[in-house]
Image (cartoon, rainbow, N blue to C red; front, side, top):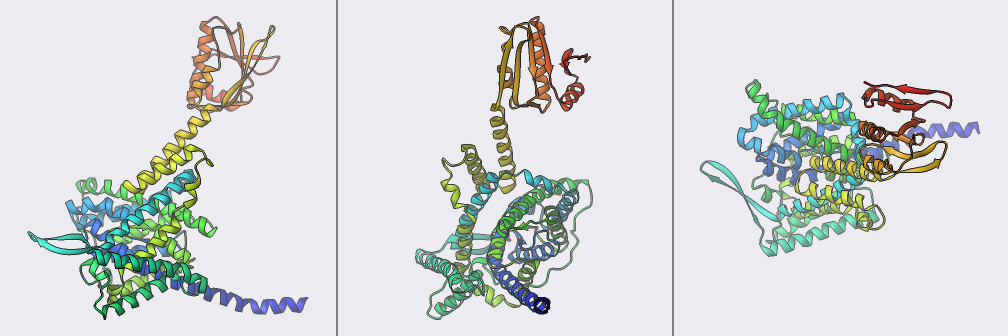
Length: 532
């Protein structure tokens, strides 16, 4: 037995080496896949924000690299995003890039402060229906955004200003592109059944690029990255740059609103993406650490001339499904993207958009919670309502607004439903009068139902409120009991409360709510509390 243990321990390093080799291989290949998938998204976000595609791609590199180094959720991918692009678009149009860079720096500082204050714990209050609504809405948003790749962009100069014009591709080209999108999706679906050595998404992109180059020899052209960008994608390393803005209160008044909105939008998407990845991998990330990582990434990005960003759920899901589990995949994605920009521009420009759209459509299929379509009649109607509300707001507004509204609606529905669960067991005798034994929680959502339980007019002269099985939660409950006490007193009837918890007594005393109330401590002792 001892020899067997020695033999097992002798092979342990070899086994660990094999496991690490597999981990490194999976992370490297998944990172490479993510880098390719980031290219069209980053270019599209550049047009939304009104900046050059190179600036957006360099932002993706810096955000992805720094966030991966400090990440609290290994495997999560961060980059320039649509949400941040939309927030900063008007700032860029009115004040220019230097104010954008200063805003990104401030946004990073705000996010770091939120993480250091450990406010990430409040992400736990996000209900699961809000999560479902977010995923469904985001899936639909990703799906709709891909149709922009079926257009061709041309850059023209009008009065000295570059203007990007977008028009749909001719019908035959759209039909051909849709065919190859479907072909890409089939490759991604069936390749894992044959081998899982290389991510199916990477295989699909390589195959589609080879097909596109082959068709080009016969005069058949597929829309590619260079066509979409309207220019050849190539560039160099980002350079350190201090934002050239006046350091005064006027500058702060301009950039602070954008920084706080961008920071909250970015953290909302990052926290929800973290929770999705946690569920997919059956592990738990560190929310506050990830918030600090997002802040560090934006802070550094602002000093390197970037447009800001946050976590990307689509690319994060691609990474996880391709085998990426550690921060290495994020580092590889950022490094590979930078390598492609600097040395692989010919390959990047030749990638057909049909292949990249097919990859993103498969992300949509895997992200959308299809089981939620069968929830009708199986889960409470209010949960379905929350899912729909969050989905719609995610599509037509932004993620942060959707999450905030979803949490508020969920809280209101909870308060309404909880408020209905309050009742009284009523006992009546000639000696002790009428006793109301309340069951449930008395709070702002249940005070109306609580008051309706009592009948002051017809009740006898002796009335007792038994709170042993009830919980008094807030000042609304204290005020309701105070109002009830006064009504009985005005009717000339004796109203007393028994079996009240110490917390409730303390709440009554602190609220200073009663002029006079009788609380029975025991059968032998009655204590009068005069509150002035």
